[in-house]
Amino acid sequence: MSYLDLPFDTDTMLAGLKPWIECESPTYDAAAVDRMMDLAAYDLAAVGAEIERIPGRMGFGGSLRARLPHKDFGKPGILVSGHLDTVHPIGTLEKNPWRVEDGRCYGPGIQDMKGGNFVTVEVLRQLALAGIETPLPITVLFTPDEEVGTPSTRELIEMEARKNKYVLVPEPAHHDGSAVTGRFAIARFNVRTYGRPSHAGWALKDGRSAIAAMARKILEIEAMTTEDCTFSVGVIHAGQWVNCVSSSCEAQVLSMAKRQHDLDEGVKRMLALNGEENDVVIEVTRGVTRPVWEPDEGTLAVYETARGIAGELGFDLTHCSAGGGSDGNFTGALGIPTLDSIGVRGAGLHTLNEHIEVDSLVERARLIAGLFLKLK
Image (cartoon, rainbow, N blue to C red; front, top):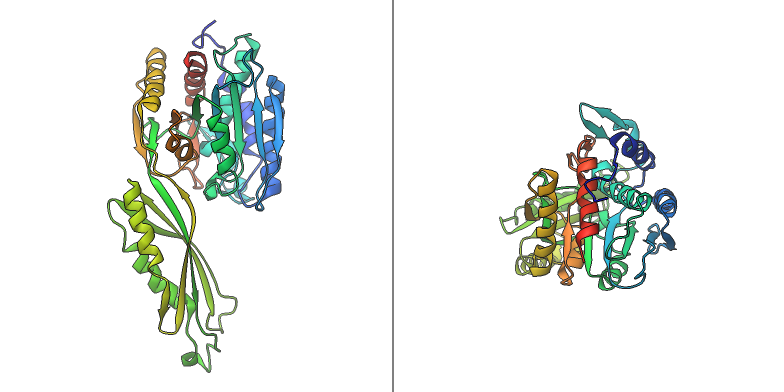
């Protein structure tokens, strides 16, 4: 039996995926992420995998490593790297509930990236049921913190990748359905302003508003955006009382660049914002960074294998370098052949319209099965 003949069934896959989507798992809720890891661990154990739970650190949930039985168990093979955390807070399911409508299936985290992760597990299940052993041993590593830059598990992912010949990342397919063979560099920054408090009613002029200073700084930061390096502010926290001039404000900035040199220059510009203006202190510190991943021969060879499989399945799989980081940045930058975004097709990731195209479940299952069986 070949991967073309494996009996993938859309309704069966939807039934298995539903509990994953209805188990909300926002990154900053470690207990919720661990509950999601429990579901994935059960499904992988049922497939026959050797399960290892890795404790979380830095306040994040734990990770899950599953290794499939194989005659070459422990030797370099294929690593599937995925994350089970989402950007959606608990309660999002009420606003974007699980439902199947007009060929689409909705739910928080279904596109990014529970859909692709579940498809991978279903592939392993079907291979086990068919008694098919892959040429290379397979390891699955699910982690809890990708959506905030992978601060607690980067070393774990990189060490696991070094033990293997290939890395497959079932992040959602690019918006045009293509796979990703490279990603831009990303840096995060924390910006803080420290002002002078005063009563906003009778002593307004005595205060120095940290919020007002931050508002001006945000405009300055976002104005630094060019075609080669972008800057955006996505989080702000400040203030407790409307009748108090704010004494502190915090913001988080994301910078993305096509080349490492551009990111390095962007980092310099951000750090140069440190200082004092109008009696308000501006403090900029650098957060986690994802390196530029540029495709090399090894990655492009894996892509060509995938493209051949897609051709057999009746569609053309293109490839691109993409913005928006993933853990593929780390493995690809290490020089380990990495193919990213081979997961489900869909749209609306990180929004209340997040959904997948139902017909991509079987399509991507056959693509991943083909890679498992053809990579040597």
